[in-house]
Length: 145
Image (cartoon, rainbow, N blue to C red):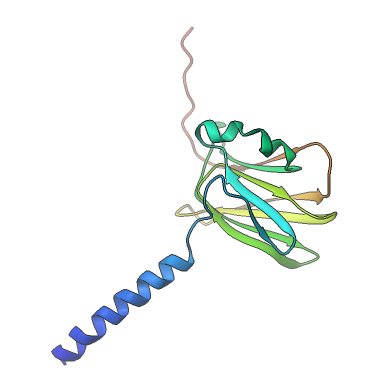
């Protein structure tokens, strides 16, 4: 029995690492395309000021009730009841270029309470629309006067 456990343990570790790799976050500041939608996770440091981000008609922002940005979320974008994009993002913004149509964006904070927030938006072109998905918690900051 002991030799069986010693031989199965490396396999279990390898399978666990493979599973963790498939749940990787989208690379920050690197656009990717799935099912006709182009998305990018951003909003941290100087990269958030990239002028190319203004070309994305939808900006989804994660924040807590104190207005502080949140990161590390699992996003699901649906249209006509079908999932068209699903990704993990470790930045506070998910920017989207989506074909014309109606969509729902849902997010769950990774490691959070499991609560989901969602908002509806229209795809297509036009000026950037900001959708803020608010999650509870956060520290209210006192201001010095």
